[in-house]
Length: 220
Image (cartoon, rainbow, N blue to C red):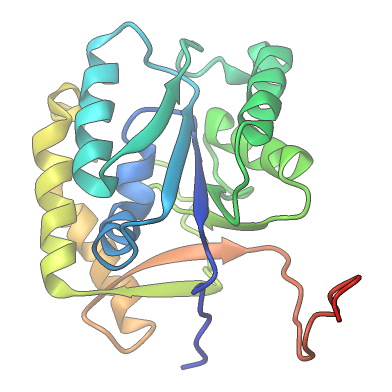
């Protein structure tokens, strides 16, 4: 397999429409970052859930997955994000300017849920010169992407992700798709695709390939 290293990452920005999107899409990746790069700053913007039990669930889960997270949760109604385009655009712009992200995680553009898709579409308008990885969210719609980046997970990390998913979001337990077996199956599928037991997958739309030493203006 061809590796992609991110050794120079100092700050990660996370974008999501709903509480639990981040845990589902990249919980294992966040656990791996926390274990191997505890110095990385993690900031997150979630569009909906503020002032509801879901906010407490999200804060608990992200703390378990990524440690200290600078987390902003808005109160955009579930399923109505496109009707709040101006507010979301402004909030994402403010969020982007509030940090110095080296890597951004957001939903992918092919996501069938309108809230997820709006976040994916707005992300590159505010993070214009950033590497953006689009995560996948298992759900009822048949919108599973053909990922271009695969991140192998240690088996213990995969197990911990599933434990947090099933233990931190009681409000979601009644949904027929919110199932440990389904989440593990997707991790296993992505693992097969990169010769590992488990993996998370991401869609990469654009990246710059650098084969020369960057020129430092004014350096002597």
